[in-house]
Image (cartoon, rainbow over all chains, first blue to last red):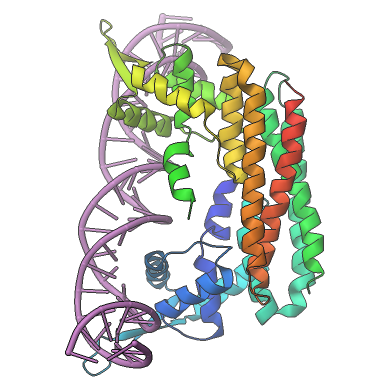
Length: 181
Length: 181
DNA sequence: TTGATACACTCATCCAATGAGTAAGACTGA
DNA sequence: TCAGTCTTACTCATTGGATGAGTGTATCAA
């Protein structure tokens, strides 16, 4: 239902957060996880093993390359860096629209802001514009769904009403946030 | 982080929706799924196979009993009904507080209203009270977290701010909803 | 010197969700 | 009338995220 593609392209996991950190400089899993927890801990809840498993997937997909750094007597450490493909994927994502749902905004959009302010601060205004537009269009869609709802479906209507209210709140929040930049 | 228990007791799946429908009268999987989709389709997105797998789990847990209805030449249909345990679990859930998160409210609380209005309309007011209290206490917790946040964590703060705004919206919405009853 | 904490990563397991598959009756229209 | 499709009813294999515990070394303080 329109949310399929968003899943695949937009990604609702901290994947991009990890990719984004590596965009700055190579690092290893341990640090990346620490950084996500400390800088975006309220945005994503990411366990260590989750972090490693996502990184493994990214490697399998060819977004990340691994260099084994051998140490005498110590187990090898794995230094991760973005491949060209990974850099591209991250950059694409960075200018892509976040989904319209509240959740996506709290997670994806905030993450995007985090990286935009580091890597492309000149694009921040644009990102806010885009996000507001997304929210508005989502509101429209929900309003249509609401108007098409038979009268007796009061619980479906309540649910839609809440989502609509939440999205209006999102718009307010976006305006307030923008003042931080 | 305090949301562990809520997961287990409160349940964030349509489990209770299925249990609740059976509380009214026995039925089989197919109908239950149809009913959820039509009455609560905006609240839960439940695929058919999901429905069946939840029902199977409920059976394994002893909340549901199955009666095979044999038909000549046709494959047997399975008539499901609540066991005493299942009835009890549903009733407990019906008066339990929903979680404080927006998501939980949109899904769990609305579902609770759906069944309360059918089975125990006299408890509706109480449920609204309870839910408002929950939301308030969640707001408090978030405000504490926010105040403890170091100044430089602006993205974590943004995320918390959004959640706080959302919860305030929830309170408004609760007041409006209550007028429907 | 020993015990705690930080570093860095691995692994087994569970369970939910997906999507496709099966199968038989009932209806529908050319 | 008979091909085609819709509805009823349910099953199953696979995927893949999330959890939680485990592993082993280094380092530092008491």
